[in-house]
Length: 232
Ligand SMILES: NC(=O)c1ccc[n+]([C@@H]2O[C@H](COP(=O)([O-])OP(=O)(O)OC[C@H]3O[C@@H](n4cnc5c(N)ncnc54)[C@H](OP(=O)(O)O)[C@@H]3O)[C@@H](O)[C@H]2O)c1
Image 1 (tube, rainbow, N blue to C red):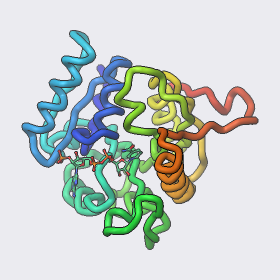
Image 2 (image 1 turned 90 degrees about the vertical axis):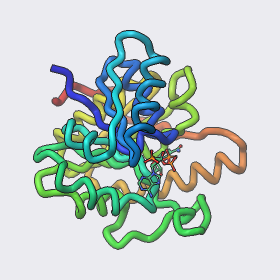
Image 3 (image 1 turned 135 degrees about the horizontal axis):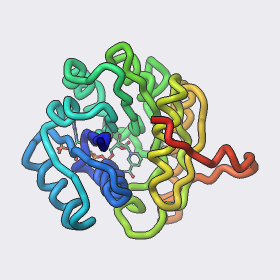
């Protein structure tokens, strides 16, 4: 039985790009949106792009969330806490909740090259505080460019995955590695997401300065550190 992936905010470039890549890898996708019709349109676009074998559907965020236990949060920071409070009653016990959020100062009218100070330490830790008990929060994909996800070529970057639940971290690393070009690396505890979120603000600054789509590659680790196994 395929395990669906609900991508909340999957109508935007980051969520749509991840969903598209996973659909290409044979995963079952549910796009979530504040508007069911918008989610269905995005899902239809994925099905039309990938071809006959895809199983993408779309629904309002709560319905999408209730239909899956692997959730990927891809909304801007300004909508992050409110959406978590909204979906909290329908998140299934034992779910994995992947947070991609970069809390850019642009959310409150500041610069896109700076992050906001967050009381909990990071957006991912805020997610962990707002999620129901028993849900495993994983911080990942912060520095994966939406432009590259939505293009055809390999996404040449490493994804550092942080979580306090090693099994959930492994499952997300396995999922990340399904995207051509991506290597997924265990980044330790969720508190390290703070650093990943901040590095992404730096990458945005590099993109502006040099007009590109930068990512990060980690060198010098043993081969096993770059390999992912199906931990589900
Ligand atoms: N763009 C990138 O290259 C990139 C890279 C790494 C990480 N990220 C992170 O990924 C997340 C999504 O990025 P994005 O560029 O795709 O963002 P976005 O286009 O601004 O938003 C994504 C989707 O979130 C929904 N949304 C917007 N405002 C919302 C609100 N106030 N409350 C609830 N939902 C809202 C919208 O969907 P509906 O209107 O259909 O509900 C929108 O299509 C962000 O947290 C970003 O930091 C982005």
